[in-house]
Structure formats: structure tokens, C-alpha cells
Length: 286
Image 1 (cartoon, rainbow, N blue to C red):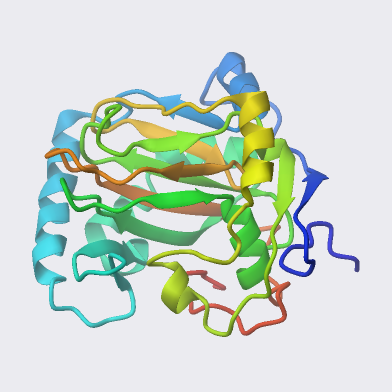
Image 2 (image 1 turned 180 degrees about the horizontal axis):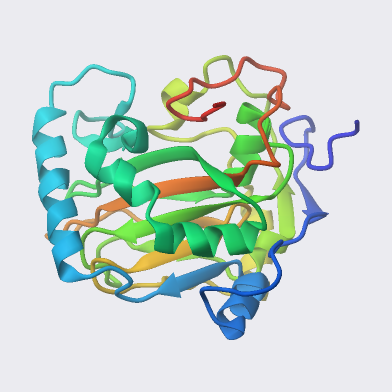
């Protein structure tokens, strides 16, 4: 079958119209129709203080513990900051950590995700992102689906990300920024994917990065916003939403647990880049 979202195969970037629904489910919903309509139109939904203080305290204690025990951890799941040895991310926390496994299977989150994706779901990827005060580096603009499609073989746009704030997010400590409405346009990127690209891209991505002209076109139409709020707030966003974050030069850390849910009807195939699949700790094939 012809690839509906070709990328990294041409010498020039292209803007392609989305060919998949945004909200798949119908009927009763754990969130309001207005919230679903907002998600469909903008590609994200911010749920302020979704989780309570006691839950957040438990998760922050585990966050601090993982930071300490992982400082000398050489496992590939532990990703370091570009140009340094501070921890940037720890992957597969839903698989390896009992506390965050319960977060990933939380029934309140599952109910919303299944309503949006219109099916049962599984965790495609999970990680904790650490963005320490003063040293936390940026995550450049990108669409997750472009990478999941090219490098993991995710066929359609039927997945979403759930970012749970473990620290207060405010305008100055490198919050996630999104371009509303950008989920309706696929940016086909330039450059052939190198072998084992993930070994570098998880620290700093150089392939699958949108070009400035495309980013400007998207931002002129949708603007840029940063949904911010207290620890325990939840940001749900479509797999193709363009997003990124600045470095954190404030004293305030900004860490989050990040869980990607994919529809069971959207199982991974061979990567569209033609390369070998990325390891299971990045892209689950179970």
C-alpha cells in the first residue's frame, strides 16, 4: 500500500493534509462535549490539577529516588542530556517501575484516552522527562507521529500522549509549547534516517525535524501556546501535534511522566524508513 505520510524520502519538505480522524470514539464520554470539540479542533486538552496532592507527593518521591539510583545506570533506557551526563529521560517506566505502571493504567486516564481513540489501547512508550533547574535542555519542535511512523512503523494517526506534571509548570521553566491546529497537517521532513538513529535522537534529534518554513506556516495559522499549571495537571495531545520546549535556565525544575497510548487497532508494522525497528523500550510491539 502507498504510504499516506511519506517522510525523509525527498529533498524538500512537504505539507500534507491529515487523512485520519482526530476523535475516533462515539457515545458517552468522561469529558464534556466542549472538551472533546476543543481537542478535535486544537489537538490538545489541558486538565488542570487532575490528580491530587497525595498522588503527586508519592510520584515526586519516586521521581527523586529514580534520579539518584540512575546517576550511574548504564542501561540504554537512561538517556543523558546532550553534551553532559545529567539524566534527560528514563524510558519504559510503565514496564520497570511499579508506581508508574499504576499511573499508566490509571482508570480515569484510560477512560478518556479510549474515548478519544475509539478502542482499547496499550502503552506504546513511556518515560520520565527530567528538566532540572539551570541545566535542563530544550526539546526542539517535532511531531511525534513523524518519528513513530518513520522509525517504528506506526501506520495511522491513532495515538496520543499524556504528560502528567510532577512539578509546577509555569511560563519560565521550559514548559511544553504547542501549535494549536498543527495536528491537521503532516510535515514531511528532509533527510534519510541513519542506522540506529535513536542512540543520538533521544539526546538531540537531527532527523525528522521540521524545517523553519513549515514551522512558520503552522505558527502563523495556529499561534503558539504553553498550557501551564500545578503539579498533577494533565496534558493530552494528538500524536501529530507540533510541540517542543525551551531549555530551563530558572532554579525551578520541570519534570513530567510521559505516557503514549496507541490504539490496539493501529499496531506497529515495519518502519516506513526501511530501517530496523527501534528497541522495545522505546516502541513496544507487545
